[in-house]
Image (cartoon, rainbow, N blue to C red; front, top):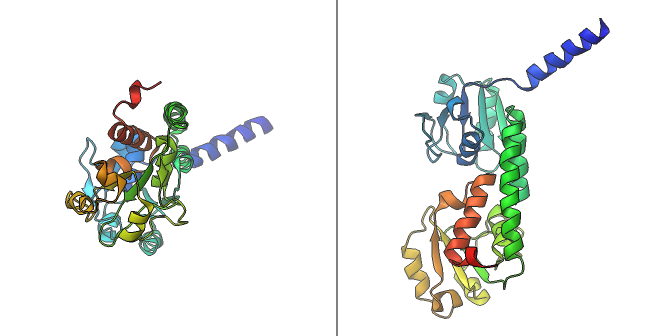
Length: 276
């Protein structure tokens, strides 16, 4: 009798730990991408403006910072997933006060934290096996890339993630962690911030070998023309200014990070795959 009672308790706890969510609202592109990768697209009923659309049509609930709370409530979600970094904390707290269940994903500053965040989400949504399989594949590939790049001659990179004013990726940004797997060095990795505001003079002084522009916000191909006017920088002299797609670089999921590494490597070093 005691054994049966214990078994019933375990079943009850398991059922409550892994509630099946059928009406999920994602409030950030990285969340939406993670849900798709975990095979949960059919459970996602609404997303924000810049989230990937997927194969199934979904409701739009506004922007990352200003989601439409009234519409969110009207959709009767059983789970809302947000992020600490991207979403407005006061908005999320208001949604919680209105009785909605919210899962908040942590801020990430490197590849390992991206993997941990993804694993936690997979565990929470009863998709542990799927998350485990994805993470093993990604880690195996990323480790293989690191073995090939770790001893190559390091080149200096300037990452531009905002133009006016000028913003870059600092030490606490997961974007900075790309350099580990590219075999490069971020010229502003010594700044203990995520995305510090810097000036052109400091970029000129540090003289990067490569300039990487991420096409977000006010960064357009006009920026390439602007940098080409400063011909004292090695990156300009050697015509090594590149534009990257924000969707390939700024969505912190394990699969997207791996994709970003591959894209940047191919962009900077076209013959990389043929190197031994």
